[in-house]
Length: 260
Image (cartoon, rainbow, N blue to C red; front, side, top):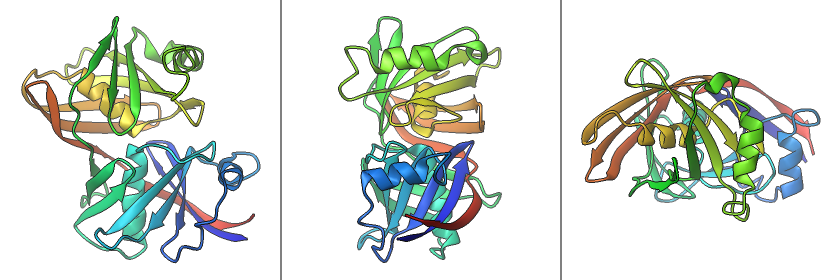
């Protein structure tokens, strides 16, 4: 099979994208997807996405982790797929698309920034001094003092494969607060990739909700990742998090062909 692929990235979180509106790639196996995402023997990426048609929405997002298995929501992936849809001729000012966790809205700003509306979050579970929440994917959030010199791989793997989370897996985020009230630094160990990624959209969102600076009302949290800068805007109402938007760059890197 000849594969026509496109490579996109959002703050270093990189994806192989296939235009599947003609259903050409419906038969991709787990092994095939794993090979495509392999950084030595394939294209390389943190995940693979299919752009599908949908009768009720602008498009449907199908997301697979680098291990070849279909995964839960990917925030940076949703932003990159929105940009890809636009590049493929689906030209709109506001998009509505279906993902595994439900319907999402997205917009492309005049400067190329892509904003993605995430699902509402009912609440945050405190686990000892850490936090667990679901922002479309399950996340564990831990506060650390010097995140850039922290062993994210070792500690992330310990938590991800701990007795409590081993069966379903969990993404692990390490967060450092800064002197700037609305700025945090985040590094993430991702399940399915089983390594640190340069950025994780649902993880950045989870960290921003945990480290809100306003107990009620509007929050905007700036987030520095190893791959770049993201912003998260949301409303905090009676312990519930609503109108959550993940905002940042999404760019095409290259396109090509691969034989499978």
